[in-house]
Each structure stands twice: as C-alpha cells, then as structure tokens.
Amino acid sequence: MLQAVTYIVLWVLSFEIGFDLAIALHTIGIFGIFFLNFITLICILRIIEDRPFHHWRDVYTRSSTALIVLSALFSFKTVRFFKSNLFKKAYFNAAFEDQYRTLTKPLFIVSMIGLLQVIPVCMMDVYTIWQLNWGYEIKTLSIENLILAIVITGLEIYEFVLYKNQQPNYMGIKDYL
Image 1 (cartoon, rainbow, N blue to C red):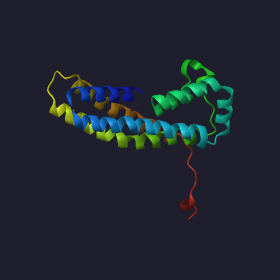
Image 2: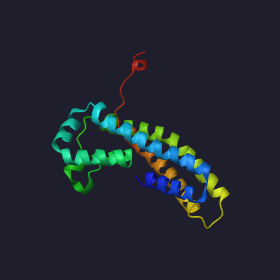
Image 3: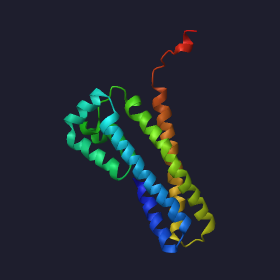
Image 4: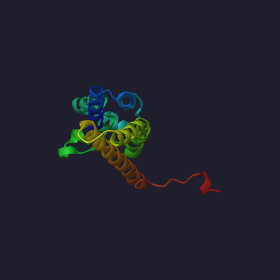
C-alpha cells in the first residue's frame, strides 16, 4: 500500500518539475500495481479451490469483503491479512487446507511478476538520484522508494523460502528410478 502511495506522490512531483521520463515510468508502475490488484481479486474470488477457505469466507463475510476491497484499491499484498492473526481475532485467521499452495505460493508468483513494474521504477529512482540536486523532494522520495522496494522484495523472498522449507517433500518419479 505504501508503495502505491509513493508511486502516486512521485508521479505528481514529476509533473511539477516536468520530468517526462519519471512521469512515464511511474505511470507504468501505478497501472502495474492496479493490474496486479485486479488479478489477485479474480484469484481470490474465482480461482482458489480451498474448501476451508471458502467456509471461512462465508462465515466472516464482512471482513473477507473488506480485505478484498483493500486488496483491489491499494495493494494485492494486503491479502496477507487473511492469515495474519491480527489482534488474535478469528476474522484475521482464515482457514486453509494448504496455506502454502493456496496463499503463499500464488502471492509470491504475483509479487515476482510485480517486479516487472518495480524494476523500471527503481531504475528511474536511481536515475533521479543521480540526475537531480539535493533540495528536490522527489530525490528524497526516490531514495526512500528504492530502499522500500529492496526491503520488500527481500522480505517476500524470505517468506517464500521459510514456508517452502516447512512443506513436506513428496516423492517424485525420479525417486522410483
């Protein structure tokens, strides 16, 4: 969510100083975020075939709807609230048959696809830092955005590896040969 707000602020500040390349790349970033939000919304409503999750979603309709709306408007990453156990409340602790298959792996895949829109914006941040003098707010926000993108990407990879290591190892065809 913070990343989307940062892109919008950088986009507005780019208009202020007439920085056309920044305007174009931040526009791509903003549309990329909303496209991924839409894809995640479709996945939550139509593709997830997890019976415990569907039952939980039917029981906690208001919180499920609120999380879906937040995901559509701000960031697909707010889907993590489904399993956050925030304030130890049941409506933030969705039931899953297999959390890794249903939530963690698809969210990681969407996040890695999201890097396609983060990389050009990070390149623009580096260019902005290099090109502009101190005193422009856009330079400070570019530094913050670059740090934020690196930290978020690192945490997403860490989360994926952590959950992947907790999954049981299934025997494949090569184990029988």
